[in-house]
Amino acid sequence: MLSVQTDTGISIFEGLQIEELWHASRIMGFPSALWRLPHTNEIKLLISIRDGIRKCLPELEKMTPGFVMSTFYWESDQEVLFLEGDIILTFSEENRITTVDNKLGEEHTEVKRLVKLAASASSEEPAGASPAGLLLPIDPHLDAKARFERTVEMAVAAIRQNQFKKVVLSRTKDLAYTEAFQPAQAFQRLVKAYPHAFISLVNLPEENEMWLGASPEGLVEQRSDGIFKTMSLAGTQGARDAAGTIIPKYDIRWGEKEIEEQALVSRYIIECFKKIRLREYLETGPRTVLAGNLYHLRTVFEVDTVDLNFPELASVMLKLLHPTSAICGVPKAPSLQFINDVEGYNRSFYSGFLGPAQVGGDTNIFVNLRTVRFKDGIATFFAGAGITEDSVPEQEWFETELKCDTLLKVIGSSF
Picture 1 (tube, helix red, strand yellow):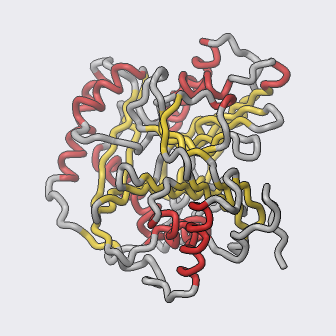
Picture 2 (picture 1 turned 90 degrees about the vertical axis):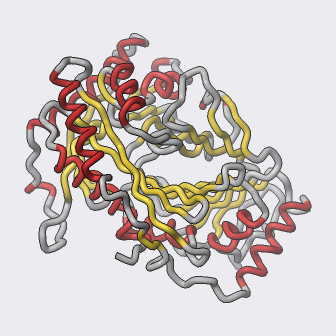
Picture 3 (picture 1 turned 135 degrees about the vertical axis):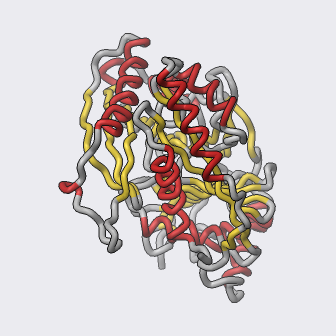
């Protein structure tokens, strides 16, 4: 018999699996989040029952365990979405529950209903055995490519006029999905395919939408031992050759455009440190790292907040960093204004931030990249590209296609 840790003794959750509990929480209308941190084997499922989705300032060190989510258009004095961790379950690589943190207790009415519904789902045949083939192409706007390339041309012209040094332009790609599409299965496919990424699936019933993603970019990490980390991640090239084989890391060569793009992001982080007069940090990189079907350049910055007596550093840096130059531009204000003027759509939670706060004493907030929104039968994929003076419009379009494929090739499409 599997021993399950819980605050109320032997857990009534024992024997249930991720998909069953996810399905039950969705039917009951509970906000919930599934995630797997990079380089780990544990999957966590958070279900918010009492408070649903509330809003709060992201004072990370003061929060109770939960899951944070913010749009791209967030100002440092604004509140973000917070899913309270009423129930947090940890699953092993074999999809077995290893620990349960149930704040409500096993006798809570909604907890018992949730478990009963999940248990009944486990005895039924699954509605669809695989998410593959259940994403269907929608007739695209014929001018989508031309329109994006035109915005790149406008950005390059603005850079040459010294309006800003870099801007990140993004676009969307819509596909239809059917009721047979199973997001929890798609999540588990991404978990297996991308061990180096932050894999997440968030249900926002009040918005009638779900967000699935495989983000390579950490924004702020605050460990329980006091270590703070952030990273600069920029520069992109395909990781596979014409035959589909992964190109060895040591064969990757970076051009001046990608090197400068990544250096701009690193300098931005260092400028944020200077604003708070923080000089004691460890900088490692830049190094070539694999993220799905792409290679990037990454530099990691690390600070010991215990030595500095600076427990609120993660919250302070979150306000200074977002939106980073990796998803907005340099300088921030004019590049953000340019995005608002020319992009032509609302990014919503794409290129915002999300992740668990104070779960197990650790906080891990990521930039919401390589992401897809499921809403009203439409799966909207989001992707962006960093534009500098040396950008070539057609190559930037191709980069966004590669980034969309990070999800598409794993969770399935019919083309």
